[in-house]
Amino acid sequence: MKISFAEFELPGSGAVVVGVWEEGVLTAPARRLDETTGGAVTRALAASPRFRGKRNELVPIVAPPNLSVSRIVLAGLGKPDAADARGLEDLGGTLVAHLNGVGETRATLAVDLGDSALSPGETAARLAFGAALRAYRFDKYRTTERPERKPSLSALTVTGPAAEARLAYRDLAAAAEAVAFTRDLVSEPANVIYPETLADQAVGLSSFGLEVEVLDETRMTERGMHAILGVSQGSVRPPRLVVMRWNGGAKDAAPLAFVGKGVTFDTGGISIKPAAGMGEMKWDMAGAGVVIGLMRLLAARNAKVNAVGVVGLVENMPSGSAQRPGDIVKSMSGQTIEVLNTDAEGRLVLADALWYCQDRFKPALMIDLATLTGAIIVALGHDHAGLFANNDELAERLAAAGKAVGEKLWRLPLDDAYNRAIDSDAADVKNIAGDRAAGSIIGAEFVQRFVNKVPWAHLDIAGVAWSKKDAPTVPKGATAFGVRLLDRFVSDYYEKG
Image 1 (tube, rainbow, N blue to C red):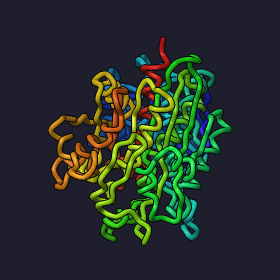
Image 2: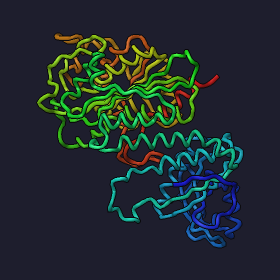
Image 3: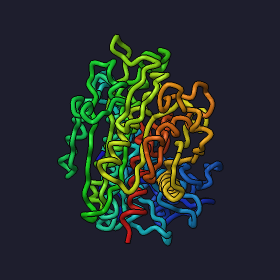
């Protein structure tokens, strides 16, 4: 779908969308259309008693009189003093879904907020951003789909001061592209995306100015990364550790570090998962996908910060060479790990990746992302990701960034009582506590043992990495949860001043 910006004028074809404030108050473009159509807009509102102008409520007027457009869509904007960027993004996404649903090929969004706190250019840019996010579709393997089931909308014009809107949209367009890139990575099947090919995707981002380095199995062995290597040893797919660097800040400034779990397929290993739903485990690399997408975005928008992304990439398979429950491995940190459950593998990947990251780069902070536990879904469902942190300021900043972009976090505790539960009788630490209590916290406590004193946060995104229903800016499927959140986090707190 092509998105463009232009000053408002009555279009000659396609659909046109105008805004209506709560209680049916027309915006300026809506009043103009009402006059041109001889009162069709006010008549449509009178004939729609349940329409109150609340956010994202829609009323279509098909084949309006005195116009050559196919339809007018009246879009609820809510209350004028409550208009904000998030609401506009949601509206843009809602409108794309509606227009595709009715088969429109071209549309003009003429949503004027008048004296709102948002400038006209920002208003247009946020509408376009929401539209771009919702227009995403992973359909490369659909070869027999009927044309009427495919998206129809090919061109979207958003009205407003064009130059201002294009400037405001520049970084948002880069974000939309990074989100789509991440969703593609997470959506690909495991026979297409596996450690080597996912590493290749990261290497391809060197064209954006990233410095990318890939550690193969030999180099990982030399560095003593036996926690990661133990997870991968049952698969014919060799592991990879990928390092991505963006140097956009002061030369000597410590980087912000982002670390991702990249289990490209997770059978559970010898502790094998049930067959039902196992196909979903292609997205057990979502944390790594988000880190790769974030690094692409920071480079694409020339972020004024130093950042490093580290992703540990493995496939967890059962075989004659697979890691066994009860095995003991020595991590890069020197700590020994008793592996009591081979399906608690993501924390082993993070153990070596985090240690390597802090040992080599001495970051100002570290944030890891992982589809770590099913227990986080039991606790929080699919609306919040779990947040764990050893630093209150870092946790507060992440939560605020998540709230701003609609990727919500909920902080859970870390405590010595939970930490003692993973003391092992045979090694330094065991990878599960032995019962189902506080499963997400136990996972976070394990990861924290490989962090030292670096300000650190752990985001358990198992419940939000994939969606089974549509939302205004997130079609069902891979969500790329975390790309926008972390980009906002970087922008708000580390690029200002």
